[in-house]
Each structure stands twice: as structure tokens, then as C-alpha cells.
Image (cartoon, rainbow, N blue to C red):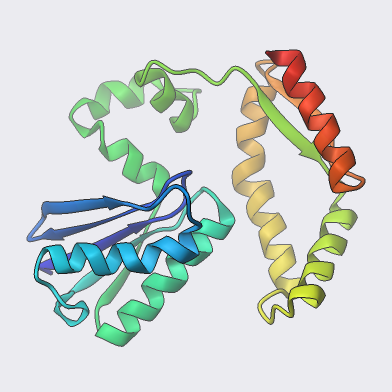
Amino acid sequence: MTKLLAIETTGLQGSVACADKGELLACELLRPDQRSAQSLVPAIDKILKSQGWSPTDLNGIAVAIGPGSFTGLRVGVATGKVLAWACGAALYGVDSLEAAAWTIAADLPDFLQNSAGNPLYAEILKREGMELSCLLNMDVPREELIKRMMHRAQVENRADDTPEVFENRLKEYEEKTFPVMEHYQNQGKVMSISGVGSIEEIFVRLAEKIDSLL
């Protein structure tokens, strides 16, 4: 493989990058004032043009597959799949946490030794001089979550929202997101808020809880 395009849309601000023969050539941050669905394709077009590449020049496309924002993840993966199919390029899924770990690859043995019993994301925050002080959990019964997703599927006429997809999303949460909350819960840093009710009611609860922490 030579020419590679990388897509990351699982975090607060996404990015795209291109590399050739293993060397990073350019990186472009997605516009923070736009959703990934709006900013991703223009960013890809911009970074390819900056290198004088056309989409058909790409040999591979690497896409971050989470954990992270589900909506952003879906936008990135869908864009990568379509682009790879159209260009005849190979498609690769990259675990976001593994990618983060490689940013400290030079210190990896010591990093792994010191992170025993401490999740990778917590150790990364520590290495950056940051710490999570509180995790706010919106507590919603499973039945209510499924009800809301089914309502959205009907209102937005989303063919990809099926009972099987709902169950898969909940399974992803239980297997990948819940352990994060459990880790901080053991440290007494989780504060749960009822996510049942109108948007206005939930907003008031959330605002009051945040105000109490400031």
C-alpha cells in the first residue's frame, strides 16, 4: 500500500489525514461549527487536492471504528465504505483506543505496566495531565430507549432503524460504554440523572446538576 486516507469522526472534533508509504503528509480538522455529515466530504476533497491526488489514486482508506460518538462513527464508516467501493481501495477499521495508544508507542512497555487495573482512556488522560472529575449518566430504562428509537424511525422514516439494530446498539453500550461508567462509579465520580420525561424537564435536571458541581 502507498497512498492512504484516514478518517476519524468518533470524537468531539473529527479529522482526516493522508499518508504515502507510511509517512504522514497532511491532516485536516473538520469544522467544529458543522456536523460530521456536513464537513467530512469537503474536508476529504480539500486534503486530497492539497496533495494533487484524486480519489482513484487511493490504495487504502482507514476509518476509526470507536468507541466514540455513535452518530459520528456511522458517518465516518459509511463515507469510508462508499469511497473505498467507488475507488476500488482497501478499507480498514481502526480501533480508536488502540490508535490513541500508539501516540505514546515509544513509552509503551512502561505505559502498559503502569496502567494495570486502570483503563487505557484513564491512563491517557493522566499522561496528558487531565482527570475526569465527574461523569453524568442519563438513566433511562431499556424499554423507554427502544420506544424512543422506534419513534424516531417512524418520524424520520429511517430504513436502517430496525429492532435488530436497536438491540445491537444497546449491546454495544453494555459491552463498551458501561464499563467506562463502572470504572468511574467505583471512584464515586458518577452522578445519575433521570432521562425520562420531556426534553425541557430533562434539561432542567441536567442544568441543576451541573450548577451544583460548579
